[in-house]
Image (tube, rainbow, N blue to C red):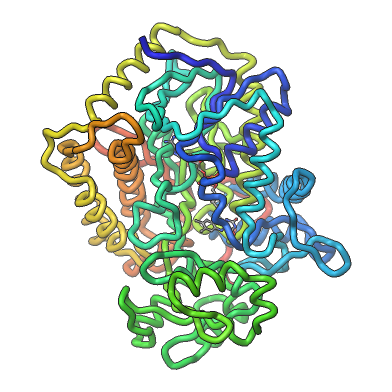
Length: 572
Ligand SMILES: Cc1cc2nc3c(=O)[nH]c(=O)nc-3n(C[C@H](O)[C@H](O)[C@H](O)COP(=O)(O)OP(=O)(O)OC[C@H]3O[C@@H](n4cnc5c(N)ncnc54)[C@H](O)[C@@H]3O)c2cc1C
């Protein structure tokens, strides 16, 4: 018999969104019990690696109207304006709350919270703790969560399936990575907080664990994925590893330079006016690609790159504001930014799309909520502004926690025998996959082919023919995946088994990205087509929904919630 564990709320993910949801749930009702499942120890979640900061109105020269409009414009008018207004109002409360829980925000001389400039933000509104913001935020959340006995952690446990009975989600099946057994963890509401999926691309700032598992779990349970075509390239990753050099480098005054040593963004017509290095990410990434295509890139082992020059900032400022950047550049590329420019190239950073949720963090499947990068609440639309994401994890993590508690109160436990039966079937599936030698396909070959086709078909610039080709290639890779062979049949820390299940999720997510992209015949935000360069509000001012279907993904649409900000040409 499979072991069955019970909680009121099950949360999948121990990053910023998952921990915030757990705390919100027990604060909403101290009597609830929360099961917090994470495939890694929570402090290893990707949130820990965030460097630059979290956005919220803090200064006297700033207000909700400005943060709201910057976000709407950054989204290329595809963000939902009700969601954005809610977000900007909650943001300062969440960041102040985090300080009370121990997050050491950097300070101005007069003791007020220090804020730095970030791309596409019209004033300095990015709160920071030097350049280790994610570490400090996650640490504060993790430590705070430990005071609640009601939050029971299941670390190093991998959720493989959502258990749905009578049209309501009522728990998960989860593989204990340490012991190799699958258990059923029941809850009267489930929150997905599983983060992004950058690993479907070859060059990414994302950690190895970012494989889109939660997106695939929801998708296969019938919840559509929304706006998956919008993939954010960060303009400044290290060539080769993809390690991020934070946007805070530009916020603090760094310059991008081409092979001629020219600060090319200054008088470059890429639509950002006089913002130069403080333009939004999609536009700067495109400008770098154009510089390289015009022959002004610098040749390196991993393709051409440009320079990020911080030398004029001086050692004191770099040591005080950007110590981690100095450390990363020295260790991973052998460059000391105090004396030399850092080689950088655009790298995949963030998924604007994700599990379709509304302003309440609810999905279309009753009882299922989602928050953080795995969700698409339509805050970010076609392009996210840097530093909105960490705050998003807090704002929508908190509302997911509260709303899941309210739902759980009115929900029954469902048919226990049916749920246990689903868990047993899932355990049998996982057991059959482990050490399954009969297949002829290697995981690494499929993963490499997937990465390559995603870069050619769904990169910074796209075209119909190459996107269609990627759609076909991913479908073929799914076919090959059905015939994988695995060598390791051991139960304890079977990383090959985990990699196989992660690759399954990556294929689902990649297919949704490619199919959604191929269906949007316009250029908007991060989705930029060479063969259809204009934004087309008449035909495409809508969200894309991608539904799972055993025969292949099915596309649908969802209205954008407009409001006081009318769509206009996006110029800076
Ligand atoms: C290098 C880097 C720097 C960044 N810097 C910034 C910044 O300065 N400002 C900003 O706003 N944003 C930044 N971002 C984006 C931001 O950090 C992320 O979007 C955000 O932290 C995501 O948080 P999350 O809680 O949604 O997911 P994550 O922190 O990725 O956590 C996901 C959790 O889900 C769990 N999980 C996943 N799959 C499973 C499964 N199958 N079973 C069980 N558990 C599972 C994982 O164990 C993990 O605990 C940065 C991103 C990167 C990669």
